[in-house]
Length: 206
Image: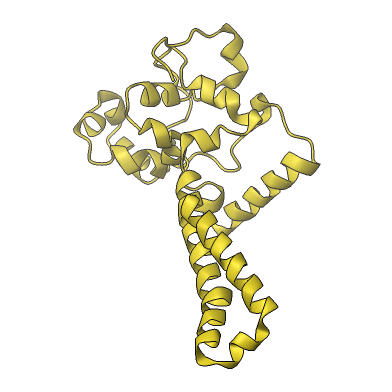
């Protein structure tokens, strides 16, 4: 962040110099200075800023920085292993500092073009629309098993789990997303923010 600010400061100072003394651009050194000031430094600042903020946007802290998402963050500390996100978060089955991004890799700026437009809509609603209550927030599309299989595919405990072999084709149906991991009687308790008022919380939480 400091490097970005430094680049911008230098660019502004040099641009002011070039604007105040336009005659500098008549000589070779002045033309080089103007090129660096007006093109190289801005591109470098944008590139550094993009890289840093894209990385920051994958952090759990960033995802939960919106007030409407705070209950989803609280749900990660629910003291109940049936809450799948809480179980993964508390047992370091996903990196805690990138927990949201790990399980929602198809979301907003990191997903498809459609997801990016949904992200822009979120920004619009945040500032100009009516922000929904946390319990009313739903996924746009059913959760894809792909997000689970990023980590679980090939895992012995996953593939040899008796519950995953109740029928001969069950594992192939899971792998092909024909049978959802989050379907009823499987891993169907997610964040469940509507029940947080009666939940107990893990004391070792964040």
